[in-house]
Amino acid sequence: MLNISLPTAVYIHIPFCRRRCFYCDFPIAVLGGKTDINTSTMIKDYVEILCQEIRLTSPSSTPLKTLFFGGGTPSLLPVKALDKILETLEKTFEIDKNAEISMEIDPATFTFEQLKGYDHLGVNRFSLGAQAFQDELLKMCGRWHQAHDIFAAVDTLHQLNITNFSLDLISGLPHQTLSHWEDSLKQAIALSPVHLSCYDLVLEPVTVFGKQYQPGNTPLPDDDTTADMYRLASQILQEAGYEHYEISNYAKPSYQCRHNRIYWQNKPFYGFGMGATSYINGSRFKRPHTRQSYAEWVQNQSVIDTPPLTSTDFLLETLMLGLRLKEGIALTKIKEQFGENMPKKILEILKPYIEQKWVIMTPDKLNFNESSHIALTRPEGFLFSNVVLTALFEKLS
Image (cartoon, rainbow, N blue to C red):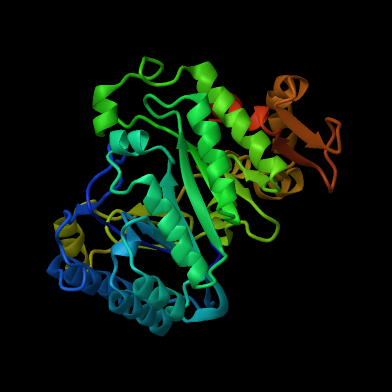
């Protein structure tokens, strides 16, 4: 049974960056260091097209409950431009008064007045892209900011009494040591974010890093070191009061990212902007990846005609996404959606990983009932999730 409920979440892609980081393969538009964001015709034109796409969408009857401005670097968006986008969303869909409105921001890309403007417009959750606290690593990654900019950015958040903010960190960077990683974790904790995201470097072929380095080779940390980095993050952050609620994410009580949980629970969502993906009526659709092709697509009012996911695809996505969460997946839900025998089939595949203590079943037995869940253990099950998922995909495809 595919998920055809109405979306209550929306992702808005803001593609602008001062420069492209060496690990990034996202659809972005580089502004350079001298562009004034308040007078940029590139930004103005993009926002016009973005709002046009939003207006062309058939609205649901349910107000939006989560909004996420991602990028790119959304903190390069002028306050007036954000106001225009939010107004368009409100007129098209209506925004719930208690909606979570998240925005990614980068150090050294916003001012006090700018952040104050975002806050005034209703942005109530900020995700700060710190990535590392060592200047040599930031420079080597092609980041726009330095370590002191992270502290300045958090100070600005504190001046505005904004406490609901997250920090992003990356492990497995070239030349990064376990000592570097431990230092970054401890400095991040000292800044008192209510949420942290810790991502392991992925070498995408089209990126600078993807062309320079091969997995497992120097100067990249070896597999044992990156595994130790993962274990260390889980240990240090949980000891500091953060719940390891998703493979890459940690939160203080009541501060899990509501929007991202929509993805992990395989629920529908709207996506707007260059390169953004939407998931509606059981179908996923990704928009064109360049500003010109995206603008042409919107202006031509192209019809989105994508085939819905098959039942097998939906099952595999449900497992892949749901097992990212601490609580895992309810077997009764699997039974309802995919048939009487599917839970038993899944448990048979997972039996060796349950014995290996990478997967846990609650209650702890191999017969499911109304309260049974399957979940990956922390940190080992999370760490070896790809092994578990590969087994599921091979035998269920």
